[in-house]
Length: 134
Image 1 (cartoon, helix red, strand yellow):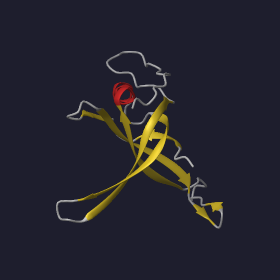
Image 2: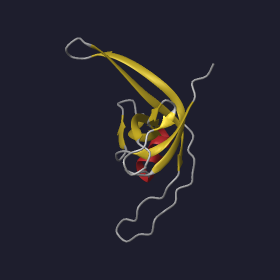
Image 3: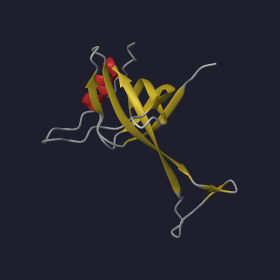
């Protein structure tokens, strides 16, 4: 059995990059996906006839070279496709309460939209794929 995730959506906030004391580069961002809201197996529509959708937010973590590329070339609102795996964590907070978390560890990120133009520069299409560096 394998733990494989492929998810496509819009970046919800600018990626946040940091470096650990051991020198590992880590970049986090959130990804929004949408799906139609269903009732008895059929999509629900609003008063104007449009499908009602539910948005789900996913925490994405990238390491080393992939993290650097994402931090440099991604921004809020861009469409990306993430290939990776689901990772669950458990920790105890300062109050002694067990906490749980879920994130997607990215192994590859495909950029599906362009960066916005900044300071009069023309938009740049980033079409590279970076492999997860362990």
